[in-house]
Image 1 (cartoon, rainbow, N blue to C red):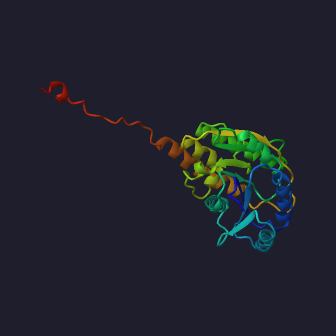
Image 2: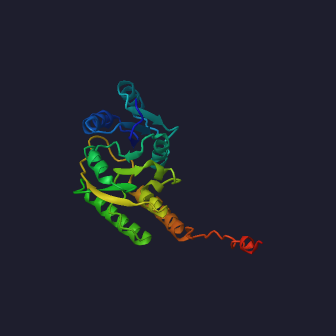
Image 3: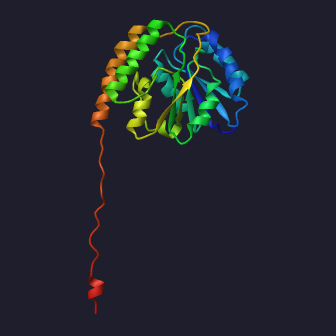
Length: 249
């Protein structure tokens, strides 16, 4: 297969029932595209048979590759592993729960333009009211603390230029702050509305506690990074031209 232009990184844990339907949707959305692509599935320690389904998908489909973490390490670790494996100039991220629509990916690719990253925000989010309220509050606090305006940092559908991701070092939980980390490096981040759907099968692996307690400490860490960022300019000093030539003779 030729080197891909787009690498799609999909972190997952215990999503066996969703993997083949997602693969079919990706096939429909991406095979008509004018750019080459690869799909990198990253199994974050699944115990429901996802591993075997991924092995079958990779045997059937030359565009798919799969990684399996040694045990459940978390979404940040799964994304980081996928980023390191990606070969495309553009890297997209997408959850395996089918709540994001793969048909939005071509539209995002067309909208990236000269930006370094493009992050989705969910329009008419199809989640329980308590989850939507919690997400709105978390985004408001995050933007207030960091001085940003990212509408929906929890949306999994994002595009990045791979060269920009290579400048970022991720720590556990920091996938939630990728737009802020990219902005710290001076990269340009845009936003775009994307569709959102009900979960197809299974349930979310992240409860309300994990969405509150961990991110608070991560938010403070990113704020510390903003305040401590080195910001300076250096001028190269050159000696005055010698006048011996004009004085010679």
